Length: 400
Ligand SMILES: NC(=O)c1ccc[n+]([C@@H]2O[C@H](COP(=O)([O-])OP(=O)(O)OC[C@H]3O[C@@H](n4cnc5c(N)ncnc54)[C@H](O)[C@@H]3O)[C@@H](O)[C@H]2O)c1
Image (cartoon, rainbow, N blue to C red; front, side, top):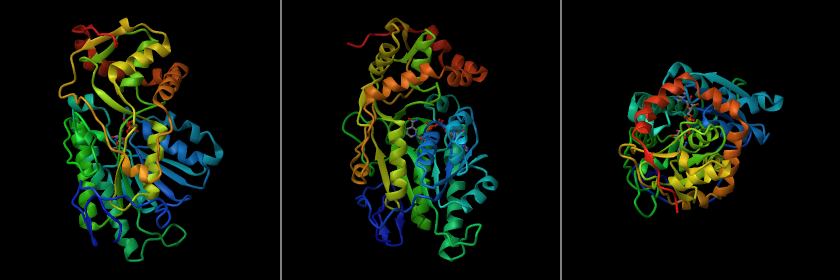
């Protein structure tokens, strides 16, 4: 192995899990996953995964995608309607409802795939504080099941015994794990680099960090072809209303109180979902084996200012905003250095103010989508998460 590694130590040497190293320049040796490949996309009915599926199939380059998704409360077949309603794309698309922690579901799908992209996760920090069990089952056991399946297929490929349904020889599958800036923990100043120690501070982030470490362990132990991306706070259409931007937009549309944690001065780096999906695809195709790639948005904003921007777009008053008791252990700031993904040729294209306006407009114009998601289970979650907090809330300080 001649390529630099970030996770695990391959046969030709490498660096310890989590340690840094240079990125491979774009185009070196052609894409690891060419157009027309068959991708297994786990968690492809969620927010970012469905954007990835829509964007990749929308290129009409012959790529085939099979989505494996458990359809938890966050998974939504409606997110894939644009693909399933288009005959050309639908012919290259298959949907399987199943759990990444279930080898019986995973093994045959990995056996047929040229690459696996894993978006599947429980993704909401607040829910991980209420009950982390599902986060660990999916984020640790599920990732292990996927890696074991990739390992078996890699062994077959190395023995020259991996074939597709038509008997054509197949190479080892590449595995891309979609991770998050939250694995670095709260970053008071400066920005996290890929080699920095992982310091997760919520059960969600701990489960994601555990997944990253497992990927590194399979790289070191079995020399699998793995890549990790760590994306920033992502926003855009089709995001579940539990997350900050859709929560504020949908409550504002309904003129309901808007809960804002603490002083609202927590800072996040915002990344548009289309830019995030593009970065993942670039890293899948051109990332170094064992490479880790931060994907920053390059747009740091205080939560309070984001809320103000949404209200301004919808013409709703600041008086809707209520300061509620903060999330325990709430990280104050995330920020990442994006030099490596930039070296692969990626830049965010969507400016935050334009992307936020378009996202708010999407929620205003697609009420049927989010009202269907805000069902009775949502009501129970919302009451549990915000009922007492809103009862104890105070007027929120206006941004300057
Ligand atoms: N949203 C963000 O701001 C953000 C930022 C960086 C990284 N990420 C990561 O990106 C990935 C996708 O995030 P998202 O915001 O789209 O999440 P999401 O909650 O919208 O979607 C997750 C999807 O995974 C599916 N899923 C959950 N458990 C599963 C299981 N055991 N087996 C199969 N499918 C399962 C769900 O049904 C859903 O479709 C996650 O891994 C998350 O950690 C998210």
